[in-house]
Length: 274
Image (cartoon, rainbow, N blue to C red; front, side, top):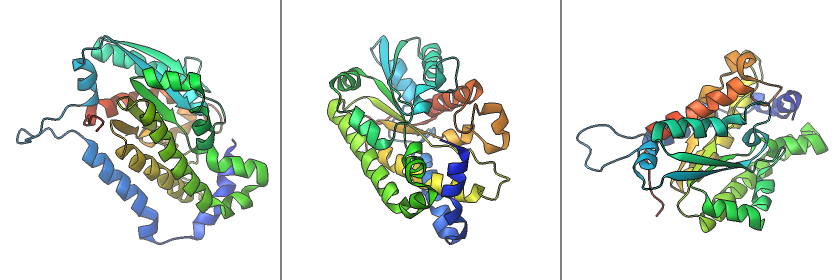
């Protein structure tokens, strides 16, 4: 996946849309984030606990953490195991529990690829025993078409690719929930690798907000689940500090993702599966 593909794919968006069309996805994301945060007012009638509180208060002494998705899930660009091993270390310190990690990330995986992976009996067994399932997926869906058939075809196919991604992500969550109704599902936002000073930046932000809104809405319907606002941690203004290559974080980047994951666990209200 190369940055030039991303730039070429998004040329079309420079000339499209009104302010409402552009800002609506981010507005909806902000609303969902706001509704997910624990209300700390003493007047709140319903007791709320955070995900960290839930893990602390559980009778379990250890947790099984499964990672699924693409090369970012896999930890490409890191010499120290990517974000997941850092998340486990932080959770162990905060809860005094043991966290066991299994990383099933696959470089180049698309949402369809992950859906196919979930049909494998060994992967299904891992899903069934998991207490936490981290997922990073979606970045390759559009870019794969650009690589195979060119950026023009990818632009022409954008609506179809977006619809397929939304359907696949729903099917991924449904499949996981059919195997494991109770695991905490942790879905990472996609992040931007185009500098905010470049003219293509607004177009890339629009695309990523579209993709990330799908993530937030999907997680909302499959509780207990949360979305990590990775784009808040990997800012385009200082990409030279956290970017390993044209797309993957380095160890600094993965540390930021892990820290944002922990912050999300601390702030979001835990909701048990219905």
